[in-house]
View 1 (tube, rainbow, N blue to C red):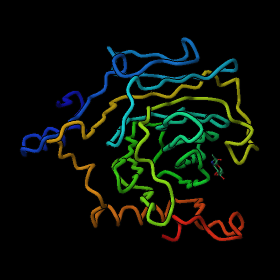
View 2 (view 1 turned 60 degrees about the horizontal axis):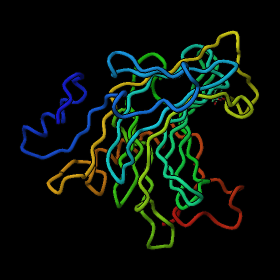
View 3 (view 1 turned 90 degrees about the vertical axis):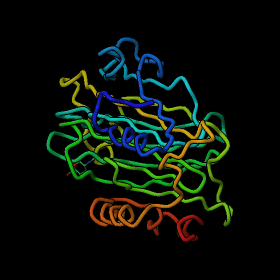
View 4 (view 1 turned 60 degrees about the vertical axis):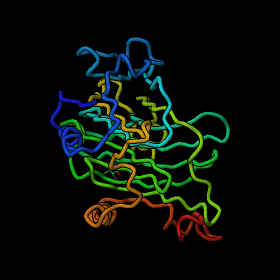
Length: 276
Ligand SMILES: *[C@@H]1O[C@H](CO)[C@@H](O)[C@H](O)[C@H]1NC(C)=O
């Protein structure tokens, strides 16, 4: 399947032309997602090509995928709440269900106009999280759509922003850290008020005179290994040299919090995956 409505996906077409088989599911929000809460604050338009969530004083809103996925590459383009977005959180994540669920999180913490969003990430395995890493972005995420992706295979989980890896969670089962590999996950997103903690640790409150706050979504794309002929690049187990360089660039210049270096939080020693 080929997505031709946006040349961002031309690469898929090229892969197909190169004779590689890629199982790509190009998004139509009407077909692939349910609007789950917030009533008419969540909307799909443009014939299923565009989705928006909004937040006002009464409620936020959210949606979830109809399907569940076990491994794959998932891309979504988001344009975050513009202007004074302090106090708002736009969460975009994959999650399975139940007390021992797995979860892969992007959370965008808003800010007052001109001050930077924080991209907060976390990974839950078997119900346990506490693996936060936070980043500033190298662009204004409210001006244009940018692509936020997760590559999830049996060896690692890679978080990407505009195709640049920002975080890798490696499979560390060999040292006893559970890895998400058997519970399928749905894709979720929501926009809500979190002014008790989101912006400067809760110091800056949501300015309701600016409501409603709105975030936009488009160009959802899932590639899975659904076919035994599938040969998507997402299944490559390791990052190539260029991607490793990009990852180091992000971690050096834009990472603002890493649980793996937070001595105060782990006086008894870091979680096993940090030193593995
Ligand atoms: C908001 O801006 C302040 C001041 O620049 C900064 O310290 C903070 O990290 C920014 N982001 C959030 C979500 O608080």
